Length: 260
Image 1 (cartoon, rainbow, N blue to C red):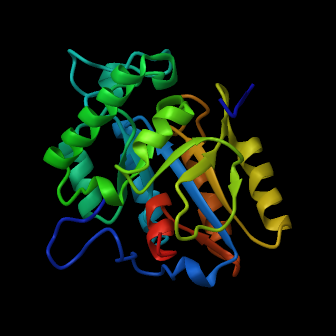
Image 2 (image 1 turned 180 degrees about the vertical axis):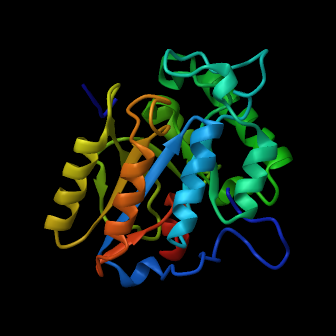
């Protein structure tokens, strides 16, 4: 079944906005951008994903809930167990290593199914926690990654003055990032292994003159909805980094480099 369905580094000498890891080039030189967007906060998978990205001098794109690690709030989802979820100690550690940490809601709620005031209140609570807990985080520089990628026109309009952009249902292959771009389309595959679907999306991207693939993943191996194997991810990044036209880049950084 198809599921169409930050970090900003705090150290004074280094910010997440503009400091790529070794081996990264400006996305403005590339015609094909790939942002693999890992959701939910699986601590085991995210640590391993970070290690794989670092092997290639790349920054990963992690999207986590503000209160999902708290037992009294938790993540209510069939594909997530409370004990799998990391916390802001780990998110700050990963940010300090050069990875992008972005908001994925206060809890894992279908915001489009809630009354407007409740939905926007949860987003406000999420951004407040991030500003308090994630070193150097600024909402106006952030990409809000909707849980389940679900939003409404009213929620998106309200959010437009509060964050840089948001990720939601839409075409997985977007136009190249540009100034003023706010709605970022994404999709994924699940609940089973997503590798074949991701391969097909990358093939489609490379068949086009240009584009920006934002693909929604979760955990590795057996964790989360639509997982991929750690071995697959390593081989995929090795292949992509050998293609001259391709840049593997976190979502927010792609917008920053485009002047958004």
